[in-house]
Amino acid sequence: MRISEAESVVMDVLWRRHTPQSAEDIIAATAPGQGWQESTVKTLLSRLLKKRAIAAERDGRRYLYRPLLKRSDYVHAESKNLLDRLYGGRVYALVAHFSQRMKLT
Amino acid sequence: MRISEAESVVMDVLWRRHTPQSAEDIIAATAPGQGWQESTVKTLLSRLLKKRAIAAERDGRRYLYRPLLKRSDYVHAESKNLLDRLYGGRVYALVAHFSQRMKLT
DNA sequence: CACGATCGATTACACGTGTAAACATCAGCG
DNA sequence: CGCTGATGTTTACACGTGTAATCGATCGTG
Image (cartoon, rainbow over all chains, first blue to last red; front, side, top):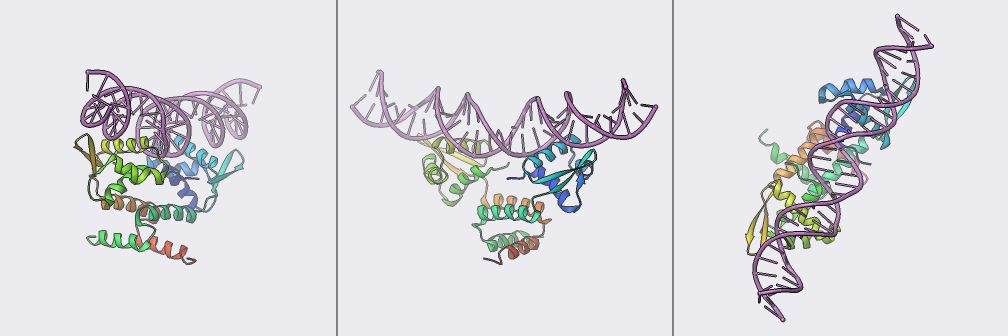
């Protein structure tokens, strides 16, 4: 199941804070920085739920969300995809690329 | 201008062969491997044209296509994007990730 | 107990993408 | 000179994504 870029911003909050977060928490942590409305975050949460990337457990009136997908798995999948597509799967090719491009930094 | 994954398959042909290629060439080089119809490649070519990622010059009845976007620029943009999003821009973090995951290989 | 605030669920909509068929044009063959 | 085949252009359509408003249920307050 693929996680979109906007969704991954939400995932990041869940990954960083290791305790289950309420929608309110997540909105507070993302919306201002991203220039999102609350509704936007709510949509992302339900899409992530549908994708089973996160789980929600009732906490009284609200839900607390926690990640099901592990960050390291996500990172690996994304990285490997890029590595394969652009560098023929060779890590050193990627490293070489960056060491070239970074010379001027 | 963003290049989609399918589009990048077409770009790859143009990048690999350094001489301008006809649509027929490009179709032959991509369609079978990707399981695409000819129409699909044609669509991708026109989208790439619209995005100005490639240029076409008449060659009698047909067109010959060549890349405008440089592969190294594309690769860099993609890589940097991933690096920033997933590794806080730190190359060594990426390398560390892979050296971990690759241990079993 | 009715009412408003709160929170999640439903609906909305435009745009990019993957995938492809239909259409138009034009050159060469019969 | 009309037809056919090649080639590019237009149109099509479903699905994911970004972005958000509206609806519906429910709880606490007056």
